[in-house]
Structure formats: structure tokens, C-alpha cells
Length: 222
Image 1 (spheres, rainbow, N blue to C red):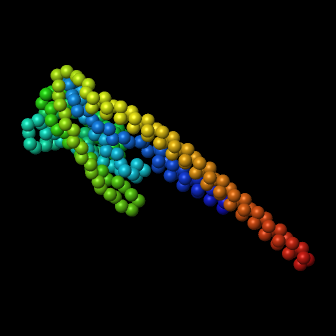
Image 2: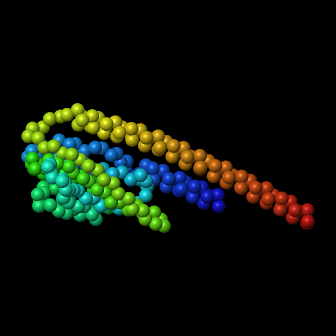
Image 3: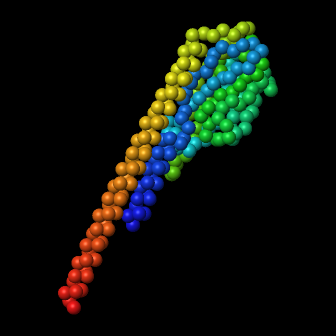
């Protein structure tokens, strides 16, 4: 029984550690906002789950309001690992650039091919996510706005440089956090194992003592 208890404790701790470490880390980084005419441009949109260990599914929709217009137009949809271009202005010019081979989408980025000046405007990224818990499902959503300016020649602004620096800082910070969590998990596993072994030893000594007492009783009776 002690061995089974040890295995169960180690399994539970392992599952806890996997929920922290094995689900890919997600960092919400702002999209670039300056596109160059005739080039490709990535519209970044990341929406991280608050509970990384909870399975989920998500769809992503993109909307566009051109400069000078008042209404948003639906231009792109991604659901069940399939993409759809919804606006003729973007025919053959939009491609999925987000999470791959999963319904649990956290990166909803898309890529614009052959950018034109008419692509200047405001883009709206909408996540519709369903979190799947053991006894129920919870639906949530997130919306992000990105204002894109199309220029004839590339310029590197301070905002772009700062955004890139912050991205690398965030990645390094996450790596350090993962190392700390890994050390914590291994220590917890080791402590749980030692405690189970101590309980096993105590149970063994108790059984041995009881057996000796029974043998002594039998000898006296004879």
C-alpha cells in the first residue's frame, strides 16, 4: 500500500508540474504599426489564456476600417484550423500567421501580402474562446485594435525598437520563471517521495512489531 501511495503522490505532483511547465508560455506582444507599400506585413494579435492548463478552443475574426471610413468590414475568419477571406479587397493577400495545428489558438496573427496604401486604417482582432472544464464550459472573448500606417519607404521608429526590446525582456523573464518553477517542482517531488518512504518504513516497523507480539503470544500459549 505504501508503494501505491508513493506512486500516486508522485503522479499528482508530476501532473501539477506539467500544467505549469509543459503548456507553452504565452506573451502578449503589441503588433508593429508601420507597413511598407509593396511588402508583406504581419498583423500581430495574441490573446493568452489566463489558465494555461485548461483545454480550450478559439476562433479569430479580423475586421478592417479604412482611413476615412466609419464602419468596420469583416475581412478574415479562422475557425477549426481553416481560414476564410471575407473581403474582396484582400483576395489572395491574407494568410494565417498564428497558432499552428491546434484549435487552442492563442496567436491570431495574420499576414498581408503586397501591401497597398489602401490598407491604411484600423484593424480589429476578435478572439472567441471556450474553456473546457471537467463539468462545464466557459466562454470568453478578447478584442484588440491595431492602427496601421502604410509608407513608401521603411523607417524604424522608437516605438518599434522599444517593442522589440520588451519582447526579448519578456522572453528572458519567462525562461527564468520556468527554471524556478522546475526547481520548485523537483523539490516538491523529492519531499513527497521522502515522506511516503518514511510512512512506508513506519508501517513496516509496526507490522513487524505486531508479528513479533503474535509469535510471543503463541509461544506462551504452548
